[in-house]
Image 1: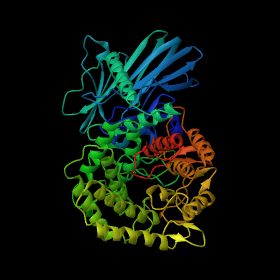
Image 2 (image 1 turned 90 degrees about the horizontal axis):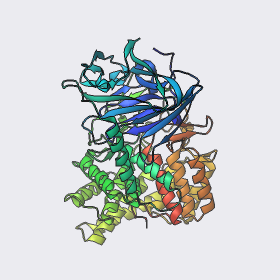
Image 3 (image 1 turned 60 degrees about the vertical axis):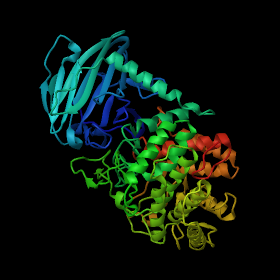
Image 4 (image 1 turned 135 degrees about the vertical axis):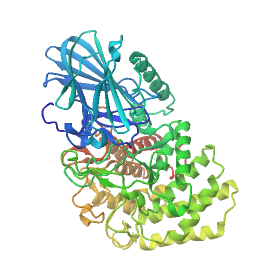
Length: 608
């Protein structure tokens, strides 16, 4: 086993994936996170939230002083890391073949100059770094590329095939080799069920070409025309890489338990699909001409929430699974010591009124864009609104999923208003059967309640909860719902209050954690999606120079591969939170659209 290994800074990782799962590759050549066979499966490489003993795969020069640079090949998720040593240079090309029978990681080591001594060190630990597999040799045959090992633990089997001679060393599988200029050494790691034969050998050159062609063809469909196109495309590729192709569900992030506060307890499992992302994701996809993906996401939404409206959840599994029981993993030390590591997410059982507004607005937007509507689409929407009619007066946990008790959160009520408003619009525009007079009365009652109880006259702004003095960044979304015009004095006062009380080093906090409203200790970083919302607010107010300046500051937070985590810690000057974060990239795409167009459409209204 190598020396004790500490996971890298979050921004030092890159994403590879095959639209069933994904892996995080460090700039040091170590794959420290991989769940197989799905995004939300138990990890077999969990060093990211533990140590090398919890599983990782290193392919890198033996020289510990080697330097590296990296980039994605063209428009896709084929990652090339170039290592430079005193004796030569070598590239490690990492990718996951798409549309394959078995999920695999392929690592191609290419000599670029001189001769470089290399090391492969594979530590497989199933069940989130806990289960040591039984390792056997694969049968030898005429093809040296087909030899290797098979590792089995419970239902999982992983096969490593390579021409490199492998040996066991300290509960790891190690291979040492040298690569000269013009040479290529390959590794293929494939997952399959343990009750079947190991996955067969792959034609690695053909898989590289096929995967490269898939991403080039997909990226060519991206219809965005405007400034920063490469930035927008990279964010859209990231969203595609977080998409579970079989169902259309998009995970919020690739990881669990990367901390919102370094060393703290704000660590959550984001490998699930949040309803809250629905409208913004649809807007981004359709603005980019990706209607197939938008339709798949909308269909996932319909299937997931089907059933009793009283049982709607704020998040679901990749195929709409509802049982997301949260538990803590005691044997993992946490990312650089941030404990606990959590699997599952207890917030799935919370009441969050805003999701009704998000879901209804997503259905409204899909209808506007003539996406083929399921036959039960309108009846499902009506059932949701009728249930909301009964519960909108109740307190809830709010859009930030607080664990400090329910309150009457202002943004929750605004989004409840939006659910009625969009449903009324749909009924009027498309001639749908609906109790319009009653619903208009409810819409007006919610509006009046918010303006009376959610607005603080002495502060001159809307507040986080009824009767509160605190703020949260979700208030920046009020004007975008159409609840009030952007230049209404109450909106102007709210934007000013957010600038005054929630901006740290130019970036926006979700809320002040000192209030203990979320029931947790410590602080968190600036929330990147919220900072993009401030960009949007500036655009809507005609403050275009400030909007562009803040947007460019946000671009400066992306790592060298264009990836963003959930948050940014202005004090440590590091990305924090789960990574890469879909919500951050959706925010980037939509802010870029608003900057290009010089306007911000209402939530659920299509961009021009």
